[in-house]
Length: 129
Image (cartoon, rainbow, N blue to C red; front, side, top):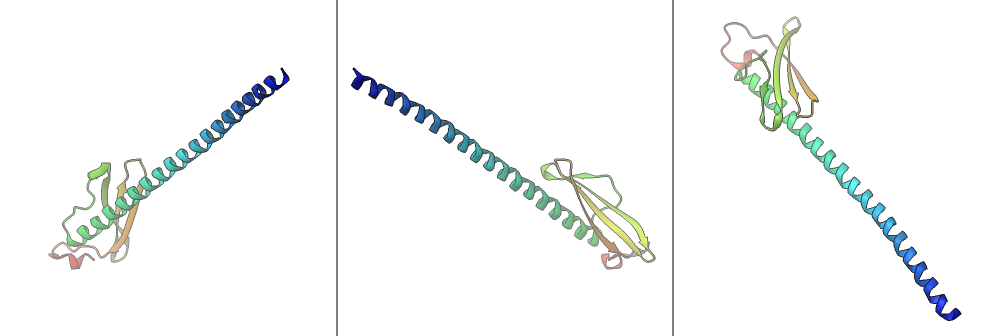
């Protein structure tokens, strides 16, 4: 009889080992899922900031060409972004042109450049920059 009881104890011990191994593997798997989720969030955030910088640089170039109105209300952009340009006096003979890009998550990116003020009769963009 003792020989029959020994294998049953060993079977119970093996079952406990399997359950512990499953718990450990589950915890490791959850940790990897969290790691992948965080890396996806970081990549998405970096992509949003990259888009915001591109929109701001594009607006500065359009303002140089005189094709984008300054001091206007924010304009909607693809992807839930908004952009606003402002021009204000900075020092004698210079204005500060600022492009503010508002990201979909509520953050914003500002890009500022100094420019010569536009004279009322200037026709080309070279007069402003």
